[in-house]
Image 1 (cartoon, rainbow, N blue to C red):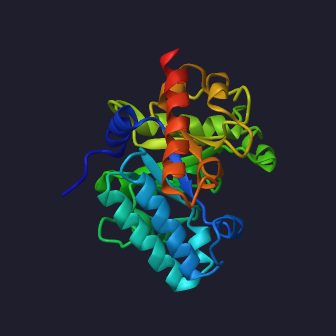
Image 2 (cartoon, rainbow, N blue to C red):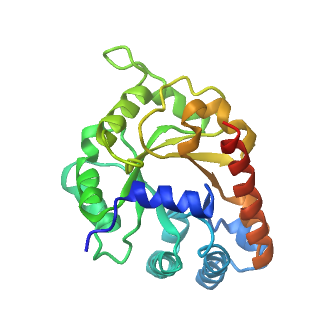
Amino acid sequence: MTLEPFGARLRHAMDTRGPLCVGIDPHASLLSAWGLPDDVAGLERFTRTVVEALADRVAVLKPQSAFFERFGSRGIAVLEKAVEEARAAGALVLMDAKRGDIGSTMGAYAATYLDKDSPLFSDAVTVSPYLGFGSLRPALDAAAVSGAGVFVLALTSNPEGAEVQRATAADGRPLAQLMLDHMAAENAGAAPLGSVGAVVGATLGDAGVDLAINGPLLAPGIGAQGATPADLPGVFGDAVGNVVPSVSRGVLRQGPDVAGLREAAERFADEVRAVVSDR
């Protein structure tokens, strides 16, 4: 059975659970801060605690695949279990994998994260368009079939990103704007929200591009990277109501106490709600 489109499911989750995405980023330093070993046992304990604390109450959980991949097949097994349990508890799972390739390889990535029969099937996945937006077609098509979503890197929060993303395309548009325009075309006519989202850093100040893509805008950089919910209107303007702020360390460093994790996530969600409701 095909799921309801991701954009509609995300809109409902944000309206009912609050507009917040919490990353599951088991850095070695965070494992240590939690008093856990930097091994598969520590990874499993960390991940299970985050899922237990938050999957039944936040809109989106975003595991960063690399932190699981570094432990090989046993780390991937932990990731598979986390995806299953988080989705069963009602959270939408956004796999932060940032995949980007061409042809059959992009098709294989799409099958990994966007095929409902895959053990890593997620509600959405992050992808990189800088081999050309058309290279993402296998992922876009697979997502449409399964009711999943795709978040496309547009303007990221790392300073190095500007040398590519702010470069000028042949028609004079910044490359980021070219990608955003492609996303808007993919989302044309979707209601209440399209399923192709953009990744736009919350630390950018005035983004300087048109973010009206009729899709969600994942905003990393809240918390430890320096941005706050109060910064969101300045970056996203009239599109702020479609923003999914992403917080990782700002919530995770409150662990391993489950209550602490929940309180931090609720605080961030409330701050975002207040900002959006003032618009």
